Image 1 (tube, rainbow, N blue to C red):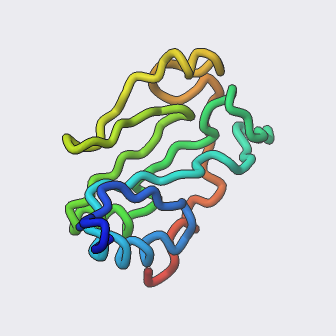
Image 2: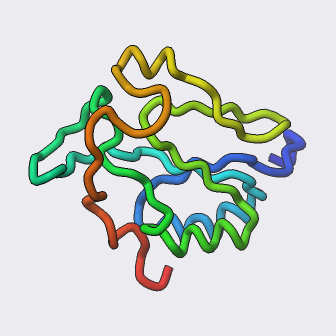
Length: 139
């Protein structure tokens, strides 16, 4: 990074694994991260109203990414002045430029998969099967 004259990495796309808080405490200050976005959301099969729902782009995200399920990460991001951008559905789109990280319309791509232009769906979301397990104890 020094050789390239780069002083920071604006966006970090951290995974939803349980040690993401520990990772954030290293990555965000070391690289002066401004924006955080989780990835690999909804890739696990889950149950909605007792019925197993397998992975399907056409269904939409199986469960929401809730900041209340990652309170330590949420608190750390706020303390580090890093802004979280959490996807609501597949093919939500953003643009990263010198002016910041901004949401972009991606309705045409979503329509190909039967997804609404904004919001979750068309399938009903259920609870995250890892709720309560997303942060390591003491992380």
